[in-house]
Image (cartoon, rainbow, N blue to C red; front, side, top):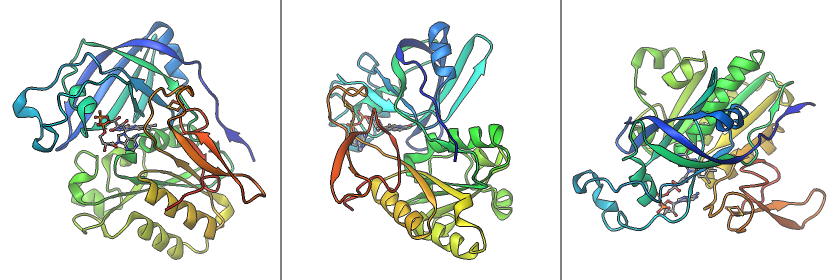
Length: 317
Ligand SMILES: Cc1cc2nc3c(=O)[nH]c(=O)nc-3n(C[C@H](O)[C@H](O)[C@H](O)COP(=O)(O)OP(=O)(O)OC[C@H]3O[C@@H](n4cnc5c(N)ncnc54)[C@H](O)[C@@H]3O)c2cc1C
Ligand code: FES
């Protein structure tokens, strides 16, 4: 079985901001432009890889733009870079344009909202190992939990543009509808047709939304929705399916378990607090199984991951 993955050259680069706009209550989209050596390095970016963004000198938003629950942490210094994935990477002649979707959760993401067109920002990347494409698979099931959306959006584009023999279907879950990190998510006509999310419909990819409180789509966990779909499609040869997932660890643990029970190959993108992002600080350990043994070893999320085989990760949840 051939898996396609390649690591691009990484470096520290200065990029310029093309735009930074609010797309939801706490969600923003930031567009960055890479030129010169950076354009080349990021042209090889794989879905699931990430960057470390330096926000230490970004301004704090004005008082009225800071959500009440973040008022205390807003003034905290942002000494360490922060990891982010891309939703989209486009190569345009001598430059590479990348889009990042982020949710405001603390001081760094708050400061990120003040970046504006024409500003400069330092990034390290591309970092880590992205999703490995297994060309023989006929169906790719992409699972999103909340802010797990960015690398999965990037992957959907790669699969539909470069591996068009693979059918792609997306399941996206969140606690409530307004925590789904998408724009225009409730277009009723497209939802009736199964093309619920425009972000995927534009690649001809059907998507199913699940919310814990039933405020949009399937009422329940996205993993229950996946299990229901697998039951309804029991005739599909399990060996011809692959699952790619990104989201909270409890969801990933369940996805890996469902994949194992159904004998479906599965890759999960893990999240850890990352101080350096380049294998130096050892702060991002992921406990992994050792093949054919009951022992476990610790791997680094930033260097060995963030994408791991679902069966490799020792989930303690
Ligand atoms: C590989 C990778 C890719 C990522 N891609 C994206 C992305 O595309 N968009 C996006 O919005 N976010 C992404 N994140 C998460 C993002 O890095 C954090 O939200 C960000 O660092 C928060 O910084 P802050 O200073 O605003 O908040 P902080 O004060 O640093 O954190 C706020 C809260 O979020 C929790 N938290 C922060 N980072 C993590 C983490 N890595 N794992 C678990 N909990 C965490 C903290 O414990 C704290 O409770 C990614 C993380 C990783 C590891
Ligand atoms: S973040 Fe420093 S080793 Fe992974």
